[in-house]
Amino acid sequence: MELPELFLQKMQGLLGEEYQDYLDSFGQERVYGLRVNTSKISCEEFEKICPFPIRPVPWIQNGYYYEGSAKPAKHPYYFAGLYYLQEPSAMTPADRLPVNPGDRVLDLCAAPGGKSTELGVKLGGKGVLVSNDISNSRAKALLKNLELFGISNMYILSEAPHRLAPHFRDYFDKILIDAPCSGEGMFRKEPAVIKSWLEKGNDFYAKLQREILDSAVQMLRPGGLLLYSTCTFSPMEDEGSVDYVLKKYPELKVREVEPYEGFCPGMPEQVEGGDDLLSRCVRIFPHRMRGEGHFLALLEKEGEKERPLTSSAAGVGGLKELPEEFRDFAKLLAWKPAPERLMLRGEKLYLLPAEGADLSGLRVMRSGLLLGECKKKRFEPSQALAMHLDSDSYENCISFSAEDSRVIKYLKGETIEADKAASGWVLVCVDSFPLGFAKASGTVLKNKYLAGWRWQ
Ligand SMILES: C[S@@+](CC[C@H](N)C(=O)[O-])C[C@H]1O[C@@H](n2cnc3c(N)ncnc32)[C@H](O)[C@@H]1O
Image 1 (cartoon, rainbow, N blue to C red):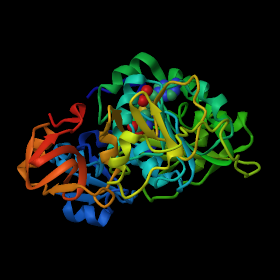
Image 2 (tube, protein in one colour):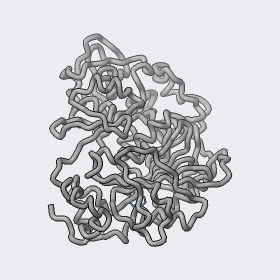
Image 3 (spheres, rainbow, N blue to C red):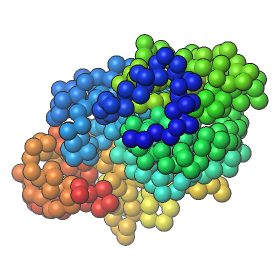
Image 4 (cartoon, rainbow, N blue to C red):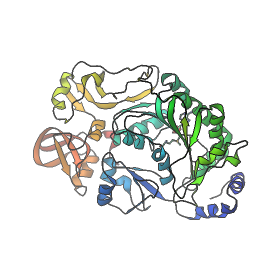
């Protein structure tokens, strides 16, 4: 791999004696990681059932390495949303942003959802996740991944950050900015990134990052935490962008990140007039840890810690009773959706987060959980609902073992045969983890798995 000369010069200046170790890391094989969806399965259980060898990522509780020869995206457990494939260093930002159930969380540059899926899990169904990406096509992948993980208390948006700010002033408890960047930390994993580095350069991204940070600061409540991350080594985009907000907003302070022995401190000396506390930032280098290059900074907005009660407006769905078409189906659910949290848009029925939000004029990809469609006198449950349920929360489940050939047939969209006769909407599971719905008639299970999600 040929690395640009200018980049190498900068790395030499940054790393000094360690420069050669960094260059040597290009001769080592890249590492592969997955992160367990702990809202569906504990790490302990996952370690028991995982069909290929895994080893823990030492600084991430639910992170694991797997061998490059394993095919984790070609296993039914992947389709059941039990894990997300993610490079280990990239697991760090969502892990080190302390999110608690009930928080209002914004993921501003979220697609395809590597961090949002974890933030959603940390919320445990309480509070709200607003997950945004400026790119509409990438936001579609974000929607799929959040649905696959079974997250329901969310709004998915596709907007420029400055358009969100007036809707959410001082609103969020936690914000994650996994910023667009020049990607220097990914040169080993994805050499194609070098081309865009050559075309755009660090200045282009530094300007964009500062604009995004400006909008985010307006949306962070006093007392709230903002985690800024990149996958580049460029001091201009890393400590430089953080220093920019520290100087512009004196109410922001850099906080310590939960440590790990392989983390390197931030480098204030790389930024002209850089605040000493920039050393609290974290740098991840591939010659120091088994992962690619990353940077993170945790910022706190000081001030009155009281939390505003509502967003700029609480626009909830507000039905008075369950729609007639949905009533029989709802009897099969162990939980009862509150009518005031239901929203009917055309035939589509949504369960909105308890926390309302005024999203008027914004490009909204999803509000809450799509429960299904109210057709003429009948209800058709959605794929998202299947992924949100577990086998204890729905009465009519049929589970196959992962080795049963009917599982892959089901995932391919084929009609399958059950061992026992059933009727109505059946939740098809693999080892008790839901995959999707089927319509049963006797032992025949007519396939209702979402066409766009099928096993290829
Ligand atoms: C590093 S990627 C995010 C990866 C994501 N957080 C994950 O873990 O899967 C940066 C994202 O920022 C988005 N982006 C680029 N410019 C943006 C802007 N001005 N505002 C918000 N998002 C932007 C890109 O579309 C891209 O998806």
